[in-house]
Length: 570
Ligand code: NOJ
Image (cartoon, rainbow, N blue to C red; front, top):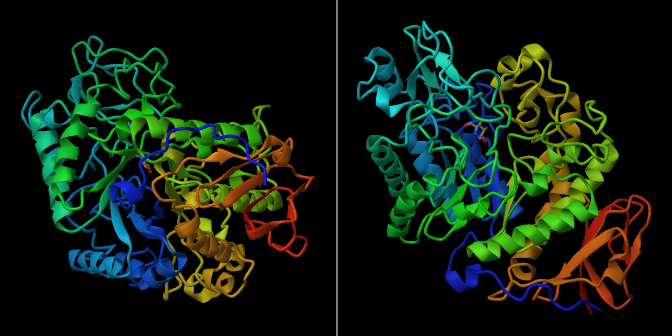
């Protein structure tokens, strides 16, 4: 088998050399409200998660990341936290949380929880007190209150816009406004205030003591606003990300934010073993993104480039190379993300026409993309084997292992995402990837989600076709492909101290493929062509093929159109 000489001479620090469990872990994201409902109220809960630990153990994941389960009015699906040290009764009790941690650890699964430090809920005790307090009071300086502009303070203090639409300033009725970069029910905290900093260190300590293994940091690039008076307008307020990759934006990705994380890292490193932390920063790619992953800061950062990529060889190859390069330089492991609770599911997303802007969800001619479902399903499986075939931390969003498509058919009156209302009904929002999971084909039990048959978002009838228990018995199912891949990955992709890749010979990959050889000897080859298969030499042994349908069997030496294969030399 011919491989080109290694393009990468440096290897990144691996789990074996550091003892860091997360460096090549598979992390499964649970959106608790939509995962499994044990108490029958139509919303998922912690007892539901406990009931599915065996499923997760069989899937082979190393950790689960729980999206917020804290007391919350759910103005933004729980990312509006009213109490950071408690469990919302609708999701269970603290005793159940403790039980979950203990059972998960018994099953060899680590627990990562979500921390939401940019904003609280407007129902948080601090914000309620702030509303009642006078301008300039200590209660108000925990948040960002500003007097409005104009003769009667009738104008917002700046042109800053909310990520969910409209001004980021909510009038209080007395000439003062408070900042909310998301929904108005999510007032931004003032991270210049030492009390805020102390409070979050204390919250993190609380959960470290509870035995969690790591944290996912929401809006990690947003904490340190430039609040020097007078506040500055943004050159183009419609851009919800830093406008120049130099820390000059008054809202996003400012240098000061890194001090906060250095303090957090000290705390995390006091624990044995040190706690994991991964930041969430939706910014255009720049080397600044990986500053969050420096080892004296969070240590890891999501790279959403694959989530934004359309199905295109060059885009994927470029993304993979770039993410690896930057991760290596930052001394961290690359993170691979195909989906989460904020974007249309990959099993639909990859069926959009080429040229679609995934973030804006528009095609090159400005229309809404029409999805090719069969292509999307094939490509999603191929993308999964790309992701799972790469050293680094792979994140799997609940339902991704089932090949579950996006539900685009929710009716306006069913939508709960604040984006729908705040965006004046221009964008349906993110509910389509948050519909409760199908576990069985039984409609009476909300497809196994809830014994009561209730489901906080309605599930379409076609969810039955994707049910986990049906897939479990089908050797060719998406679920079984994930199980095999995660199992193989454990020995073939977790590759000791040297995680360097050798890119496969372009002759082998043709015009539409790319691939790599791992130090274990396993090779990964992805074929992006919709029509042509690639042919492998006869001496190789196939380990896994993303297209195990009737037309393509894993024993052949073909890399079918729109597929990824894993193989070794005999
Ligand atoms: C990112 C979260 O993933 C998203 O769901 C949420 O709406 C925003 N942060 C605000 O917290």
